[in-house]
Length: 115
Figure 1: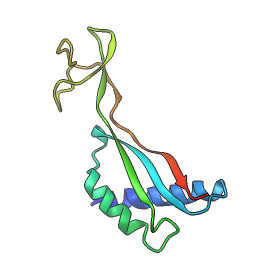
Figure 2 (figure 1 turned 120 degrees about the vertical axis):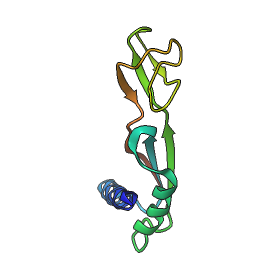
Figure 3 (figure 1 turned 60 degrees about the vertical axis):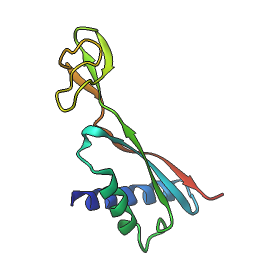
Figure 4 (figure 1 turned 30 degrees about the vertical axis):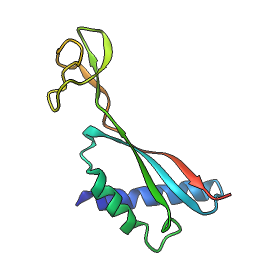
């Protein structure tokens, strides 16, 4: 389960950022998680609970924003959502995507801290 090692990294990163800003109790860690990241959301939530035990994040929540896959369509010359997965074809014209614009994310976007 690679989600546990990812959860440990999230906890380390959140603790580091909270300390850098002199933040008190962290109530929530906000995360963007792309559909192509290869990470199972439920497994990550479970792993986060384990990884944050006995740390200042023990009572915090992991808030996950799921990011859909968006491609650059060479035919439409625009960013488009995909019509199928895993083929990554444009939802408007059906052309295969030139490159993935969004959907690979795994990033901490915010911390909620107690005042």
